Length: 153
Image 1: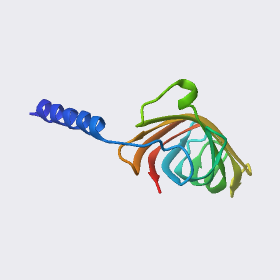
Image 2 (image 1 turned 90 degrees about the vertical axis):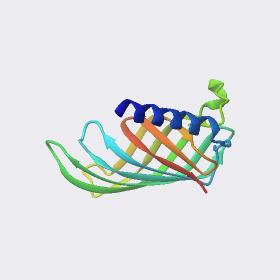
Image 3 (image 1 turned 180 degrees about the horizontal axis):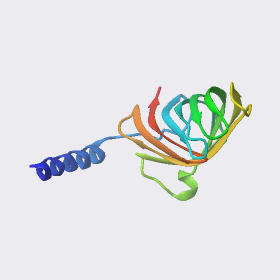
Image 4 (image 1 turned 60 degrees about the vertical axis):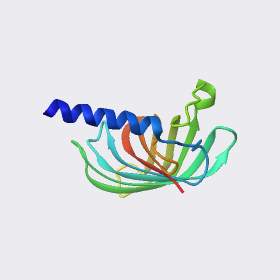
């Protein structure tokens, strides 16, 4: 019975991914929200960014904010970070033409309030899978990890 449920779930998932339509999501008016985890500080939190402006053909910049807590040998606590997130959508350069997928590199820079180090930064690579015209999933790996959702507003 368990195998039957797994089989039906797999068929449903394949159907959803084959029939969902999506557009090219690059550009402003995209809200990304996700859970974050750092690799060296045992931290966990939530981060959101809103892509505000298109910078050239493949780049966006957005306002970014995060709340995170950490616990390592030297420090324990939580902090609030604000800054900017830059994304380079590499679909055109990598010749990825599928409308449901976006591949990108990103970088964060900003201020970390109530943290031992006042500088907030990070780099990573990631991807977005668009389930519908307004909703998708995203994952980023780099100086930390993020998994979350994306909304076209």
